[in-house]
Length: 198
Image 1 (cartoon, rainbow, N blue to C red):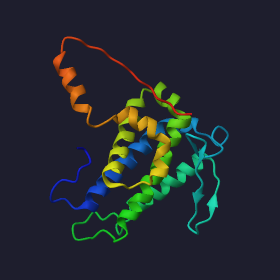
Image 2: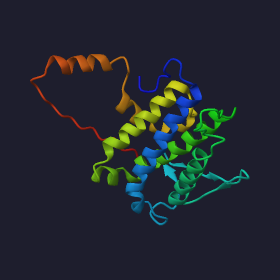
Image 3: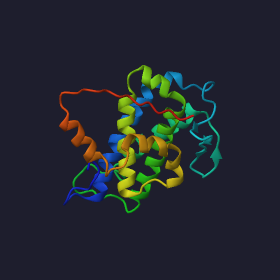
């Protein structure tokens, strides 16, 4: 599977590589629709199911901010964190900190909020730009990583549970679907399913 830890590879190194990839892709997708995510159009950072995300500052104070500001905080925090050599070491001799997994958990939780907001408020724009397949792949990657290593609290991920099921389905049924496709190479059927949550 895409996210299974290869034998002999350090767990923290594996988490770091996936975290960096997810950050880059989520930042890229959001960048393409950021002009539609405005202070007036998105006065709160919301997700499906009437979920509102509050920002916690460095002192732990909860603050209600508009979605563009919240996402800017997420991207700035993540960029600063992944660029910090003491947290995400790039040199061979440097060690990961003992708190590395908890830092990754926080980053992935915040990135999940961004993805939830994009699906909830901006999926139409993503689809019009033809980027819905890319967004779905990024979400599937984040979901599979979380399923494999339990990095995000289920209370956070339940809001996109229906989308997760639609995109990933039951892993036990995937081989039979592949087999059915291979058995009928002369028949081509394209089905597009778009799931939006409101």
